[in-house]
Image 1 (cartoon, rainbow, N blue to C red):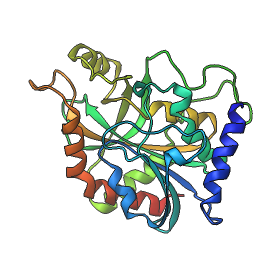
Image 2 (cartoon, rainbow, N blue to C red; image 1 turned 180 degrees about the vertical axis):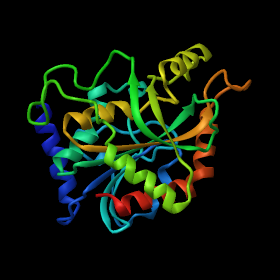
Image 3 (cartoon, one colour; image 1 turned 45 degrees about the vertical axis):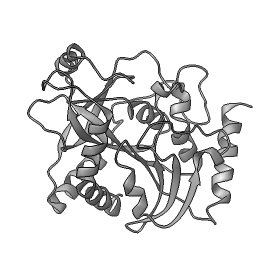
Length: 274
C-alpha cells in the first residue's frame, strides 16, 4: 500500500467518527502541555492505536490520542501527544498525522512544544513565538519519492511560520496581558539533551531555543501549503547555562506551572484565527 492509500484509510476512519464535523485548525500539543485538550467542548476522542497506519506515542506526558471538538467557537483537531524521530520513527512517520490533517481538509496548523532556552536573557516559563527554525540534522520528512498529490518536489520555506499568524498571536498576547518572546527554534534529534558546546553553537547560529520536535511537522506543512504557527514553552535553560543537570521531569513541571497562561493565549489565538 502506498502513502496516499494509507493516508486515505486514516482519513476515512477519522471522518467516520466525526458525524460530519469538519475541523478547520490542527493543534499539536507538546510535552507537559496536553491538558489543553481536556477543555475542548463536545469532544470526539480517538486513541492513536485505533486509526489505521497511525503511529503511537511512547513519551511521558503524551497521552496519544486525537481530541476533536469545539474550542473558542472553532472546530479543532487536537493531537494530545506527537511523534519524534528519537522514538525510532522515520521522519515521514513523524509527519504522518499532519498529512492526515491536510487530507481532512485542514489548512491551518498550530504547533506547540516544550523547548530548552538558549537565549540567556530569557527564563524558564517564558512563551516564545517561533519566527523561524534551523535544521542541521540530515534527515528530512520529504526525502524519497515526492507525493505529488500533496505538494511540489521543491518548495519555499521563507514563510514556514506564517507572518500573518505571528502578528495575530502577538496581538492576542497583548490583549490577554501575556508577555511573549519571538525567536528561532533549532532542531536536535534527541533523546539526549544537547551538550553545553552544542548550545553554544546554537546560540552562535542564531537560535533562541532548542528542541526535539516541530521542525519536521513545519516542513511537511510548508510542502502542503498549510498556514503554520508555532509556540515554544521554554521549560528549562539549555545545557551549560546553569550549573545543574537537565531532566524530563523539569520539562513536565514547567509545563504544569504555565499551563493556565499557555491555555489562555492559545484560546485567544484560536478565537481570532483568520
